[in-house]
Image (cartoon, rainbow, N blue to C red; front, side, top):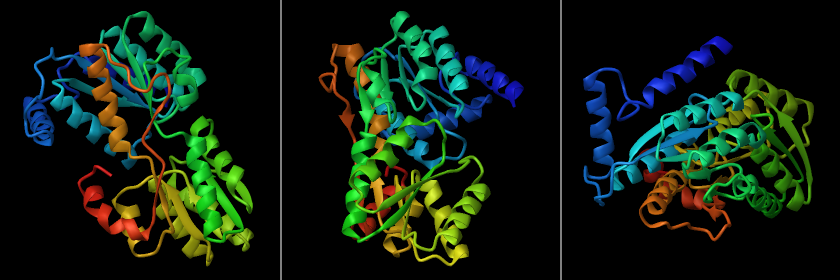
Length: 334
């Protein structure tokens, strides 16, 4: 695995030297260009230089949340005449190496997540020392300013958790399970701790290996079988909600499944009542605004937020709102 990740970093270093992170063939690059142009009707809205911005996240493979973030970033990039590069790794040390690779290629701006801030601090500092402006997104709001980033875009995870606790209270829940799918992710801990802060019932944490969905399902199922008094399960990402639904079914549990984040599957399951509610942090806005704010800083010296995070959530989504949002989830923007 270590050898594979090393080659992944080397591969990124090569990719950053290309005009776009694309396939090796000319046809693949043209197809990627066409998709990005279509996202913004093929026109840049500005005549500023074609700066290169790199986004490096802690996403694992197959996480639809980050597809939505990228959709927002790519649309803003076309509008702002930006060459947009995306890379990710769910191992913090490897993510830091991807930031280093972007710094080495002298990109014009970096967008980064700080899910495991201690491991990312030195890499962000190197970007700052190189004169590359940094915007943090999604995770790391508490560390963003201290690390020297221009601003942070996302939701306050503690506030989001508190909103979940309030919603569970409204629904009369008494005993809830908070499923953490990435150990060491400070944002996930903040979410569950926020739930515990406002929830008047009992909250338990369950740590699972989020890269292995069968294991996630088995762990949740075992917990529901062992404790029939659990009446709510809160997952911390949209892909895990459906897995929890399957675990509930196999366990013969009556617990309500609720989740952070939204995608097409979650919207459909909210609509048909399979899920109780979702907490949307509007990932499309996180990607879009990150690119837009870096552009505004490069062009006009603008910094949004006044030193405070720019909040994109939380918004509680229930069955009542699911139908209206379904079309947006299908096109990959919610």
